[in-house]
Length: 501
Image 1 (spheres, rainbow, N blue to C red):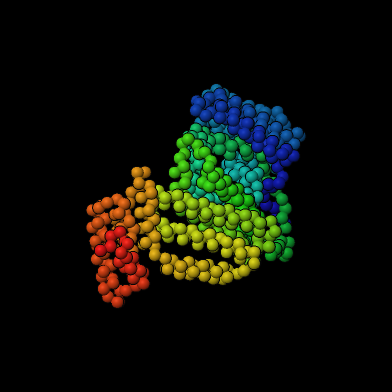
Image 2 (cartoon, rainbow, N blue to C red):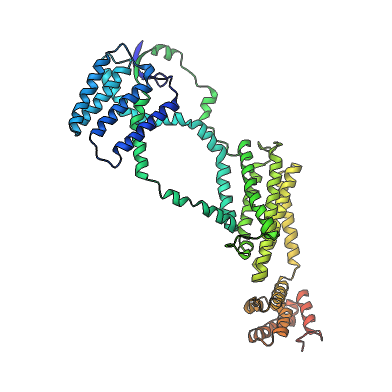
């Protein structure tokens, strides 16, 4: 049999008192320390605080008081330690005060105080180790295991939700305005960091006196332990290697609820102000609302699609959930609405700033995103594999690109821009003649229409001459011949063409 001194975290004086009451008492003492010491000169205030700390420690650990001990002896030692500090506070009197406080508490509450060595160990635990042990006690009070589990459950909803809020705010001036009203910077400017650190330091010093923890000698049979070692349970062996599941069913459920709420706000605002005739606030113009955010909303939809694909992977924990499936359908429907709103925003933008190749590419891209979202719903509903989804998206991409290859985009852009400019003449919409000419010979019919309406614009006239020369070079050789160029030449050669001949 061997005797060793071990801490007993579950046996300490005053264990019947709830931790919440002890924590409240500790904060009261911290507040007293703040009033006595923060930004003040020390003196008799140290004695006052020592008396308050002694009374608070005995009150918090009243059930553990050893009433058989000589209470007068503890009182004499404590008062003797206070006298030098009351006379004059200096380094020596402060040391006597701290020792008297620790010895007084130890005499009345430490059940293992049998020798000078026990007294020394008790003072060391209380004054030196105690503040560091306060951190472990705080972890126990805060229940870090539960906090870790909550972190795993809420990390994906809050992190991805924050990204969605940022993207929606960048796309919607109303949401950006509402977030600005929160103005978190003004509250942070009033936080006194030094005072917060003082409170933290005071709490670390006070807490060991409120939650006393003494050591005692226990008998441990080392031979018995060696003969019958405790084998760790299989789950315990693997516990440290188990990684947290950030896409469990509860996490996905919380994510979908939060994301649907966020997207419903954007959807409602678009229905009222973009598709309807709602009246915007005075400091937000319709142009700001309509012409902004088409591309951030597409990024939002793509992130949402990635989340749905990851969360609803075939055979995953959420694949068979009857609660999650309708939320996924609602979430995808809101994302389709988001893409349609992006198309409407881009359409309104094009009406003001005219059409370009990149804006047509944006229209096509948005259409493919909408098709991809619908295919995700089909995959989930029909329980298809990821390979099926990839194949279906590749087919839609191939069909879209094939149709685009048959469209004369240069003629479409030129005709739209000229027609829009002519209809909006006098309202500030002007033709970008350099871009119009840069579209190539297929823009010639639109340029001729513009010249007929606007007169002999020198930039258009010189540009048209260059395009006519390019068209003649194309038609001069059978190697460069194309049916689209042939149709253009027939249009230019018609007797009724405005500039034929």
